[in-house]
Structure formats: structure tokens, C-alpha cells
Length: 316
Image (tube, rainbow, N blue to C red):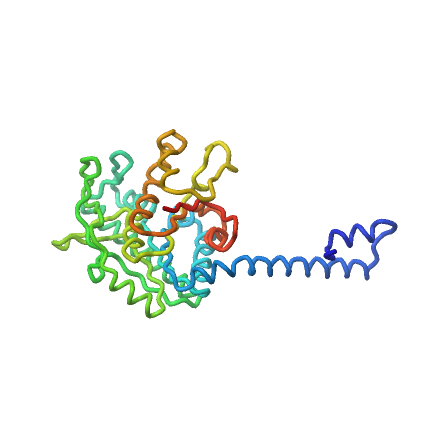
């Protein structure tokens, strides 16, 4: 029988009070149990470390983890661990609520059509400023953890080519749709042991700058690089069979089941564009696409290195 704090306490308390020596034995057993639990975690992670060694993982960074400094540090720590155990991580990020905040600070009113941001030239200037600020903040955090990181945007080396996006015929101004990703720059950074941190400003054939939806930019990057994994850090727990039951998260699913869940109304509202983006990732050739709740500390590690995981994994 494993000697644990619980069974020792039960044994000593059976007939009398604990003395100092007995308390020391119990505390020692408690420490040993905690160390064994840590060892078990490492053993559980080992096959995943072996399986994904030197594989590319694209992390789309967003949600509460972008605005909560403590969650931000946890995500960065996860990326650092991924790098140190042999992954090739890439971070793709947008500007989130920061862009709207700075638009308002500039005396303008953020404009949306069907929930999509309209980006005129003044807004585009603000978006580039905010995206650069977020980008350098993430790079700095990684470097402080001893990891070589470089911030780039789609305009650098012109690696992210775009065209004007007109979803459902809407004119959103300087909003772009990715048409091509030249992987030369990103592969050069990966081959030289850097973590690329990508902000989602692209350029068209005439040199015009466009703001690109970060989710779809991450899909384009992951697909072009034949990434092993694409992870969306969001503010939802994953795909659920019942939105009113937090314990109904689907751990593993596939494209066929996702389409069925959309058709029968199980997936509805704001989850539809999220899962459609995941399907686009799978269709682009990414082997595994994950939806994770970034409000949970160390969500990346819990999903990738444990048997159960905490989010939803979508496969072909």
C-alpha cells in the first residue's frame, strides 16, 4: 500500500493524538505524495513530447489572455515550455479590444458591419500602431524567459499577400483576405531557433496595407507551413453538446461531426464562425486544430501534454 498523508493520519488518529514525531512523518509523506504526482505528470507528458518533437505548432493568441497580464504570462510560459521540449511554436495575434480603445481615444467611433470592423485609413494607422505594441510586448516577454523571439508582420518580406476582403458583399475598407503565405521568412526564423511572433497586417500587390482577421491569418500561416497543430486561445471552453452544461465539452471530434452539430443547431451563434475557422484549418492541411479556454491558466500545457486535455480537438 502507498504510504500517504491520508492513511498515515487515519492510522495515528485511531487511538490517540498526534505527537511531534508523528506529524513530521505525515508531512514527509505529504511531500512525497506531491513529488510522485509531479513525476506522474511528467511521465504522462513524455509520449506527447516524443510524438511532437520538432513539429510546428501555431498558437492564435486572443481572448482574455490578451488583456489579463497574469494569463498573458501563463500563456508565454506555456510557449516557452513548448519550445524547450522540442516544439517549433509560432504565435499569431490580432489587436483585440485594444484597437477599439485607441480608436475611441483618438476621438473616433469604432464602426462595425454585421459584427465586422470597418477599417478606414485613420483606423488602419491606429491598428498598425496597436498591433506593433502588442507584438513587441509578446516578444519582450519571451526574451525575458530566455527564448529567442522575433516580431514580424505580413508586410515584412511581403510574406503575407492579401486582397481586399468583401465578406457577403460588405465593404469593410482596408480589411484583407490572405491569398498567399510565403514561408521563406518564417522557416528561416524557425531554422535559426527563433520563435516568430506574427501580427496580422498584410500587403496587396500594390503595396497597400490591410488589417487581416487574426483567426484566418493563423489558418493561412499554419496551412502554408503544414503545421502539426493550430491552437485557438479563446474565451470559450470548447465545443459543447449543451451550452448550459459546462461539463459537456467535446474532447475530440472531426469535421463530419462538426458539420452535423451546426446543421442540428447544437453549434449556434458566435460559435459558428469559430468552428468554421477550425474547419478551414483542417481543410488547409493542419493535422490537429484545438479550441482552448484562455481563461484557464496554462491551458496550452493542459491540452497538449495530458491524456484528457481541457478543450476541443478537431481532426479530419
